[in-house]
Length: 340
Ligand SMILES: *Cc1c(COP(=O)(O)O)cnc(C)c1O
Image (cartoon, rainbow, N blue to C red; front, side, top):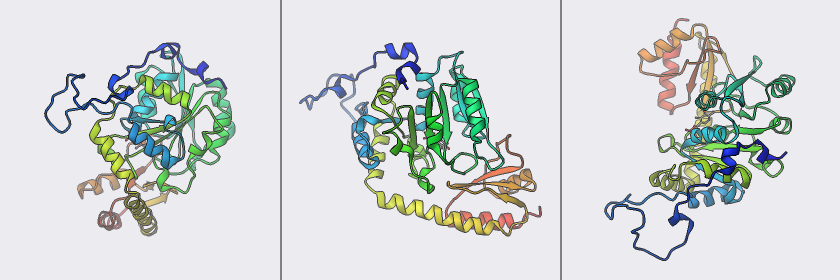
């Protein structure tokens, strides 16, 4: 597959904005080149190439630093990917339904149609549906979310979709750390049309810092670096992410904690009357079908627990994410008291 044929012409012609300071190694401790203030701890522009962070991530993920792009959350990377490949008013994206709302949000801003691939009742993709819809729609980018939000399950046989899609496949791995699924990063060697997204917002506990990463071929990463805002990730966030990556032990402990709480909650949910069905999850949340979702939602909210019920495609469901033991215990106590 010739990836450059998928790229919008104006993007191919675009000259990246280059931070002069970042692209050259100067021996000049006195910086009078960028109209910054000489005062304060954060007076300098951040590294626009995010080199230290890329080097460290590349090391951990076993790819080259030139195969890593950093975004202001993976949300920004979703936006940039659509802008790179999808001609406004002409091209479409393909996404699973139900899945993460931001794909459709950014596609709409860019005036791209959103083609939805309906999942079956177990929230799996039917391969023959995929082949038909992909062919009919000629979509440029397919967003494959695994584990999927808001359903929580992983999608099997991801390689099949990469092989059989005539465009870019974005595998969104926002919840991969909580799952037993292998990251698709290892498939990058074989598929030039693959982009893998990960984020510091979930398992890494850094949603407030806005740091996400994309892994892909050097060619695609170059395109992302070309279209991104030069200073898209601030220096505080870059520093924080580096610190987190230096403390893998703490990270692993926290993920383990959440996974343990997930098993505990799953057991507790079994004996609760207002719950009709718990969907299998490989993430840090549960999608739960209730006998009366509105009632459960309102009751929890009245007792100071906010959950999520904004999923029009899935009837009578709420999404509850896993908290600490104290929060989870309170949740279970409240749920037990809801009389259907
Ligand atoms: C939360 C989430 C993200 C993360 O977005 P950030 O911008 O990195 O915070 C990406 N994809 C999915 C499916 C998510 O649920």
